[in-house]
Image (tube, rainbow, N blue to C red):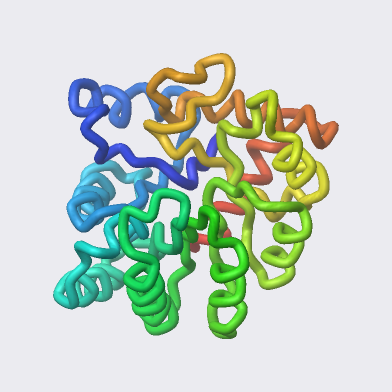
Length: 254
């Protein structure tokens, strides 16, 4: 069985075959738990709708830093209300993205901190997005001493930073990039991070792993990611699938 800790099946690229994928193909492939992750407010609402439709799908609620400039106070209130929904298991993906800067940095920081307050009040885990904001992200999380369970999605930082997040109680999200040839830093993170602190993710429809790189990604590619992690750590693919499934169920209280 596989636990998909980060997917975006609300994305328009799934409009033609979403029901077939979620209703048939994924369950048949042993993918028995999927987190559909909110990014925009539209994505948040659609994630909850998918979770209501499919028993094995769960939702996270929160907005990606790209959309920070569009987030209104009424949206924050809606996110907090949705935290009480029985199929909502985390707040996210929230964070800082200084690579694209689709929203001004100051606005990103403000909305990130406001959503962290929702994390604290709800008691839910957090799904973190960070890009080119390593120190500010970590310092902000360390400052919020009551937030100590969550995952750093699509981890791309150093081994030292991975170790610090694990010390705080966080999990490391590993996706298709681990199969790319020029990801030596991520491979080292996987090698040294205990398996009981790793989550599998695809971030679909983005970042398909080899041998399907460049194509639309789906959770059907999770075995490729698990196999690469198994190769790095010298264990079986089955061991990786089993332990990361346990990790996901534990973190998100499923």
